[in-house]
Every structure is written in C-alpha cells, then in structure tokens.
Image (tube, rainbow, N blue to C red; front, side, top):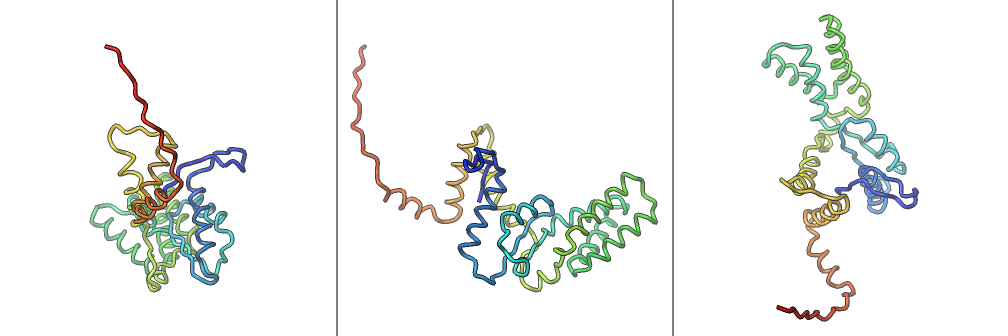
Length: 228
C-alpha cells in the first residue's frame, strides 16, 4: 500500500503520517483475515519509531504469535560502518563484514557486540570513530530480541526487506518521480491508488465494479455557433 500523509476528521483534521495510515489499514486487514493463533511477521528496518508505530497500530496481537525481524541489509549497514573505522584495506573490510554477518546470521549477535567493543578499546579509537562503533553496537543491542536470523531462516522466513523496498520503488518512484512531473498531494495519492490496483492484479475487477455502478445521466452535447 502506498499512502501519503492525510487529514483525519475524527482528530480535528489533524495531518497524520502516511506510515501510520498504512499501518492502520494493515491492522484492519490483519484483524479481518488472521486466524487466532496464526503467526504474524513484521519485517522492517531498525528505525525505532517504526517499531513503536507498529506496536501502537497492531496492539491487539499477542507477543507470542508475533515475530519481529529487522532487515539484514540494514544490519549489514551497521557492520559496514564499524568495519570502516576498525579495519584498513578494502579486502580486509570485506572479510570483516562477511565474518561478522555470518556470525549474526548464525544467531551470535552478542559475541559480535562484545568483539566490536573490545576491538575499539584496544585500538584506542578517536571519539568520532568510537561513536560509529557504539552506534552499531547500540543498534544490535536494541534489537537483540529480534536478531534471531538462524531461527528465522530455519523457519523459512524472509530476513531482508528488498522485495518490499523494490515494490515501493516500482509503485511510487518509477511513476511519480519522472522528469518534469509535478504533483499535488491529492493527485499523487489518486495515481498511487490506481497503480496499486494495477500492480495487485485487481484492475479488471476494479473496472467491472466501476462500470456496474450507477452511471451518471448523460448530458446532451452542446452546440455552439461561431461567428466569423
């Protein structure tokens, strides 16, 4: 679903972020379709506000039946930031990133955090460089209960948001960000709704419903005379 920020009348026409509107829609769909004990997987990047928003919108879901997965590409980004300040040489950095990602994929995130902090201390990094390592360790620690990639992979679950982000690019960017285009919020939202219908393979059903609706009364053509 592609959703721009919009006004909510029940909240006094307050402008609500598109992410909240989309999550609220998703929550309604989950409530209608999900069986009582069916597993719910929430796959997103590590931005804390996204998870708190998801918690607020999906508050009816019990914790034991919900799996939260931070996308592995975002995890890899933090490993890369740490490698940039801890390792010299491109080949060595690639080996460092590969080794640490494999450990994370095997469910050993705790040892990764301990190793990064120990290495940063031994190297006596500057304040700025140490901040990069601390940011990575803080990310891994904050999402420690979600970084169970070995369990997710064993269960056949997705651990990367690439398919989601690719869909966002196709739905939004490829259509709205063409050269020279300018959009109003209402015009962009209308186009996104139509594009979602088309991409979801329900365009023909939408057309049938549209044509079966009560048609407007046709107006007779107006004939205008022109003087020469």
